[in-house]
Amino acid sequence: MGLRARLEVFIIAAFLPLVAFVVSLFLQQRDTDIEHARQRVLMLAAQAASQQAEIMTRVRGTLQTLAMIPEIHRYQSENCGATLRRIIPFQPWSTGFAIATPDGRIKCRSGTNVSTVHTVADQGYFRQALATKSFATSDFRIGRSSGKAVLAAAQPLLDDDGTVQMVLLAGLDLKWVGELIKEAAKAPGTVVTVFDAQGTVLVREPDPSGLIGKPMTDHPLVHAIFQTDRGVLEGDGLDGHARIIGFAALDDTGGRIAISVSRDLVLGEVNRRTVWGIAILAGVVATIVVGMWFLLDLLVLRGLRDLQQSASALSAGRVDAMGKGAAAGLRAREIGNTAQAVHDMGAALQSIANKDQLTGLSNRRYLENKVKDLHGSPFDGRGTLALLCIDLDGFKPVNDRHGHHVGDAVLVEVGRRLLQCVRGKDDVIRLGGDEFLVCLSLTLVDRAMPMEIASRIIASLSAPMTLDGVEVRIGCSIGMALWPVDDADFDTALRYADQALYLAKQKGRGRIEPHGAAASADQSDRQPAANQPIGVSAGSDLG
Image (cartoon, rainbow, N blue to C red; front, side, top):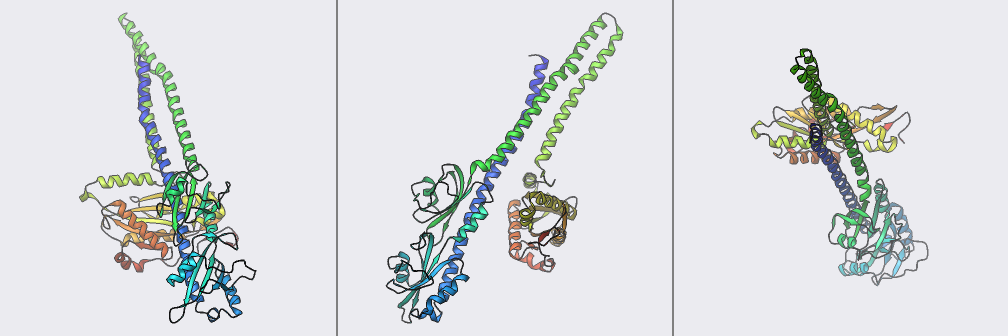
């Protein structure tokens, strides 16, 4: 193998670690996108289950309140139906109310239309309410009058001796699913499905295959969903396409709600980025190899030929040929410059990997490397870090009203203001979306200084921003923890800061919440004043 071929092989081998590094970055992003999709569908399913449980609590309370109204006690009164009808506008979850005697005959109802249903004696939930003399609900089912998926509830009213005097009935529709569908529809390819306890599809949006009303118990996916109360699955959905499915049990009904998203859509964007990245990298490598092929001839092989000619000239006694040998030496030094250029390119890619491309701040990968360095450092040599988890308040309306270009400009401005609020030795990291982390280096264990900086951050981010002619007002909430004071494990301390942030959100946003009750009590007088109203204006009202 000649010198040129050996050098080409060496160059290609030198690029292989770089290629592997870039591919690993894209694969890591691929795993991150899948995990994000898994967490999102599980969150939506859990949110739906929580909403349904909340509605059931309201139903129970409403029926217990109705039982104390005199007109309801005297259900033979002609005012009974009118009383029930007056209640409906204040109970948006209800499809109607009725009163039944212990033998199941309906004596009074809120509806004015003639109903074909005159008895509920055959209904399991009604018999359960009579037997237990307590609140009972049905499974999700198709209403006999409405033909829609509903849930029925019954509340017995007892005499002084404990005998059932009458039973209050209420019907619930699935309007809350519509709100969930609106939220889920923000991600393309999302499907919302509600099953009853027998695995029959009650609600499905969208439903191009017409699965509503069909039992799906035999489908492997449905079978797996009913094995546990909550979780995430990956596999072929009811439409036969690969999907990521988050599901949760609907309490008191035995039913399940499933939120799924197309796996191909989740991976589509990252796959495109991977293909383009590898193609660009391959193009760069090919260009360098081809260029080096000619440069080697120009700078190395031609120089070697000159040296050979010079040696022959010197052997013949022609001393003036030394100039060519010197020139050949100058050409050979260009190889060092090429090697330096390759090294610089690798360093640039490493820098890009640790930077958020939108804001220029450090990114999550940088944080992971920092955590590794901290855990690898001697315990005696560790300083104290104040971890400030920051979440923007009012950012979503900015995106919704003015578009992502304004939202991106807001994130860039937030990054700039955060850097102005901290010192040069501190780290400002964008974790993703509108979440940021500030790591403050402390010489001593001191909560006062981080609280002051956090207050400065809240004040800075609450100030108006004018971007592309649009005035934007946002805010932020901050949770704080100290490492290794609150916990020697960095990930645990970071989780404490995130939990404190969640508590700050619960307490009204626009505030700082330190981890731990003692810290909160010490710093309660340092909380900033109430936030200004959060919103966006562009020369008109906020709407």
